[in-house]
Length: 322
Image (cartoon, rainbow, N blue to C red; front, side, top):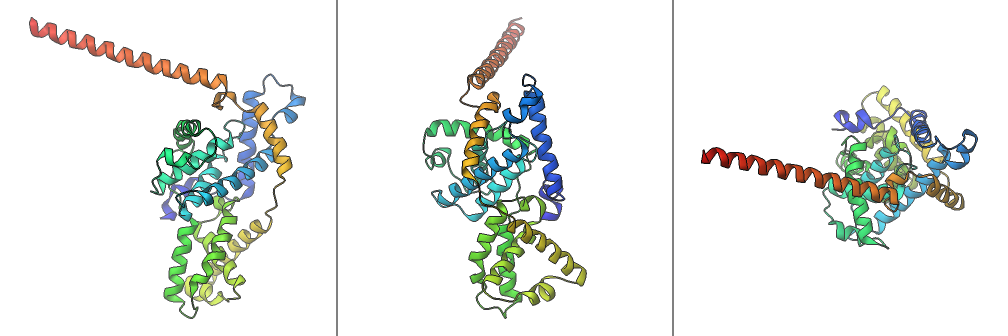
């Protein structure tokens, strides 16, 4: 139930102002931690600004959506919804200067397949990618646990696509005056796709997003759904007024969506390569040295445990002989 979910408790926010404050804080925390050797007057040109981070992440959300749409075998719609919800959650409290969006993007899609019980082996998953597939697999598996910990293991996503299915069933059952409700599906799904590429998924409930999609589609089909909303779906004037207010907010946020300036994003990408945290860059020598050190520590721990077991076995043998 969404009403008792971690999604509502921890990952649903009051509005865009709260989200902006949290993201600016994540941006400033990174700059504070990694900018000790960068003069104050040079920090704005060296590190990504909050606005630059938003543009960069927008680019990777679009790439994520395209990747899901082209994936083989074809994904159910819920994989896209869960992937984008994960991606949005992660960047509420983390900066793309700390973790590259490309690494997180692949990780969230792979994890979404597990969460939504659409099993895809890692080898088959990376076969949908061009380039060094072994490296992609290592990156995904390396960042998977880190990603889950950053989300505090809150992995359940109440998906607007499932809520849409519920509404279509309800319309077929309780609003029989509408012939062929399935004709609402295509435009509703497209509208929900647009919602997923915005903060709508972090502010509104899945049912509100789904209803907004259904009503948008009804408008495209020249269908009047007023009676369904005010007499069938809702109970009481207060509920209707509250619902209409939230639907207007969603509509306003979708309308504000702008085309991406890809040339500007390309410049931001180059800036990111200069200022990103090399400790979280799988291609950097710093990262490789850190991984080697962790492996050495693991081997030392295993050796220590083996020595303790051997010592315990010798002690028991000695007691038996005595």
